[in-house]
Image (cartoon, rainbow, N blue to C red; front, top):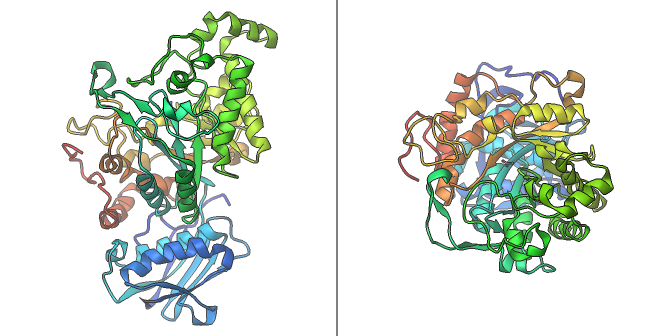
Length: 525
Ligand code: ACM
């Protein structure tokens, strides 16, 4: 559903984030009590119950599945509603929710909780009834892809931490959590047919201290990977929260951890250890047929943990110096009629895209893959600049706009010298205000092709983020601002600021170590 959004038809503004398309205040309140009596279509039950439980916890009660005639909250399919959309009427007799799908039902319950007192965002019982003001809210997302990425390669995050991250994404109506599962500094997912990927690749001896240009080594080993059981747990946790996990295996660059495990897939025999410095390595996979076989086998094995999910195949920052120096690579260029080494990367993009599509996955890749021929079915994640997204749209691709200037939350939260060390030093900064000003569809995307911009995504690269608290600090409140941009209802900054101040109380109730909204930075994490 596209086109101009209708905004409030009421003078009073509910303090919802994202801002709803339409909200009308009714009279009175509805009193929610335990047990929370819920009626929902059976195929939505798992998701609806999960979100209803969040409310029931503060009532110290359970969620009970009842007939609509007995329910406090009744959910039904809304015939004309798209995925994620809902139409919720709260009146003093009960709550009626029409939704397009389970995610729409979930988002209605998130909105309901936002209308309730902040205490309902705590994980502890606080009251015997919750008074919810009567509203009629009609809402739908503008963009189908509302993603957030987490780099678990540079610093590994436990299953518990990732589940918590998924919870916070879901509470902001983000529907894709993209896990960057490998990089030069670590391989983080079990692949039984290639055990050395984790035996060797999941461990590094040291990490840099300080920014890349002046870093010394901490000498502290860092390791971790997800087993198949861990991934099943993550996938199920996400499913119950209307979130899809998108695994990324980043090849053929960012491959030091792979090459430490299986040096035969490299261009030189010299790589023997997992990376311990940040930055871009010139050591990449070679382009021999058996290496492409390896890449396909590994990526498909990881994809198999996530049936039906989109799969990200990386493709960023792959220097061609080793290929240019390689007789074998030059022979393969000749065989394919390539005139530039950059075209060799297309062998990976093409092979992996086709293999994954055959298994029922859509494929996402970073925008550098456009330097070679690439199937138009590949979704392009435009990270360097939205211009690359525009170029991809022009070439017929679907695009996720993720330009670093607005969506890279590894940039500092402000220009203050007191911000914790981040990827870039001040004056580089991405404040929540700047994030809020991000427009997903740039002006140079022609109107008739704008549907190719399927959404947007925020990135949390973790070279300089090693703890859950610091992850919170870098993610919030920027992710709250981003959520409204991705939903498609961002508008006036100062009005948003008022809602964000209220929302910050919810973030605090959730135990999120968010960055303060004012200009002052925390002096440490
Ligand atoms: C990237 O930031 N290298 C995708």
